[in-house]
Length: 105
Image (cartoon, rainbow, N blue to C red; front, side, top):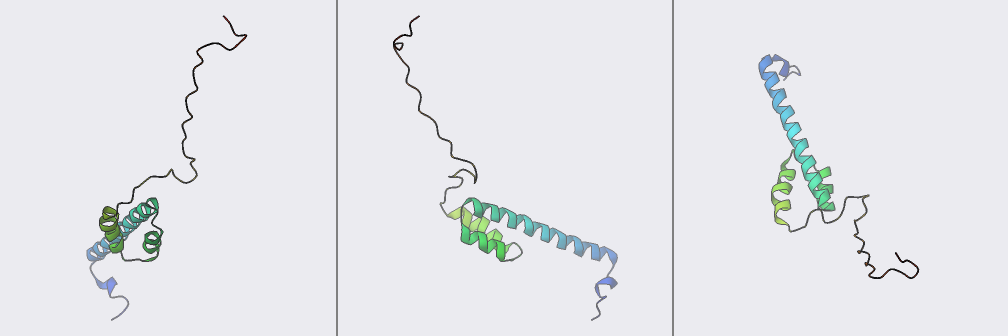
């Protein structure tokens, strides 16, 4: 088979194959991004590394998003984002009932 076998196909078919390939790549990138984001927020380092390194054209990402992330009871967003200090509420100042000495109206 020659290297120009794809070039001999009709032009419309070439565009269709290219478009399907582009949509597949874009879909895999979107799934990978969503799965990595969810694994990072759930602080699951093992899943994050596996999703980052293993390329399965979206299969592992789909499994993580629709099976693992839905079944484990890990709370999301329990800590503030990195670099943001936790918010603490200061106790209310007690109200003085009598003025201090030397402070009269």
